[in-house]
Length: 227
Ligand code: DX5
Ligand code: ZN
Image 1 (cartoon, rainbow, N blue to C red):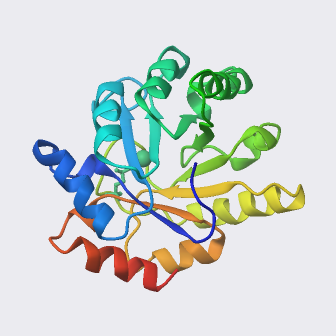
Image 2 (tube, rainbow, N blue to C red; image 1 turned 45 degrees about the vertical axis):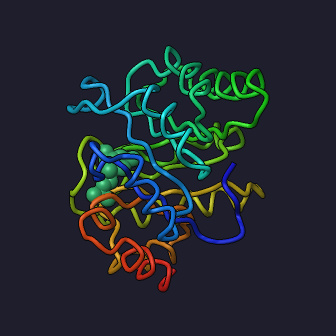
């Protein structure tokens, strides 16, 4: 589970040095990271390939930070049990990839219960997907992830239209008394994170803006200072 007492910085290991992954995770943890964001891509839902449950299993052995698994894959139901068994704390699926989204979120909860812990349910929307499509599923979400780039690659530019989507999700949740996490992913940097926070986000994914330099503490610190 994430902890809600402050806004959370979630470094995306997609931008880390994969040959030294444990060391990279240790360094961002020491630098003040709150969550580790794991980008899972299948070369089908998105045009890129990254990592699967085996990486999550190894990450689980080297950090106590929550592991936030962002599944950019078609047919996530097929792999959810493996991600839960590997130690995922939050599993986010894409609205666009799940024709039976309610059932998929149930599966995440059930697999978590079977493993004896709470696994958070997350739903993500691509830049072209209206957040209104989440209206019926919102009470079943522990987290909503608004993509601020088209998923598939790190280092892209933040799409400004994401700000209004964040405000809308926060309004939809507040109107129904739901206290969900609102995460934003893509193109987040120290110079735009303040307005993203102001729009209502509370979990900030950042890949290149953290791993792109040497001093992770300075980079995370600069973000935390303005949110
Ligand atoms: C994109 C991924 C993001 C990505 C963010 O498909 O979901 O998590 O790694 O990278 P930056 O922060 O470099 O945009
Ligand atoms: Zn991501």
